[in-house]
Image (tube, protein in one colour):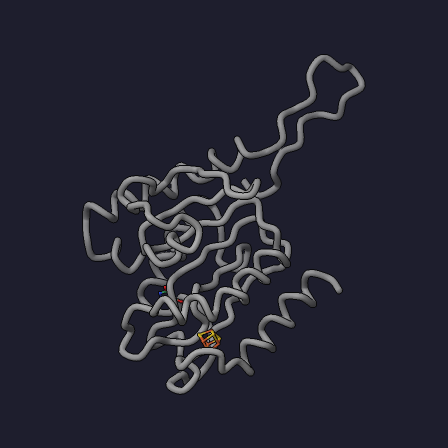
Length: 205
Ligand code: URA
Ligand code: SF4
């Protein structure tokens, strides 16, 4: 199966999923969207009101701001994968519970395996904790950390940053740094060889 097929299979399985009680109150599942060949994956917390209505991630106010942040580094949302830790809306936008995150983690894992992104950007505490438990977002946001040979960068949640000027400055600075972080994650060029290929540039930035 191609990675496109794998992603579609995840979405199909999410549509049928009843593995946690969030299935009871959902209107639409929100599996996430973006090309299987994405270099970057953005992982939020869970669907909110508008996402639950439309079955698409980050389509409300936080989504609009995320689109602005992407545009600030020359990206459109269609060029990256955007998903969430839980695929069904927690009622009243409450925090997702540990057992719900656990039940849903198989889908996020399959999405990561299908996409094999150059970097994962976590948005908010719950998404960060999926990769880095027991750290504080204020300590590690914006830093490139390697986890199983993959770069993971924790960022504040755009919904939080939107309304708090101090966080807004931080997330905008973290986005501005992202292209540089990803460039440095590219394989080192071969040394001391006239026949070597020129250093590989990442196509994204
Ligand atoms: N907030 C999230 O964490 N995810 C969404 O999809 C929308 C808002
Ligand atoms: Fe299944 Fe995830 Fe929805 Fe829970 S949140 S019902 S685990 S898809």
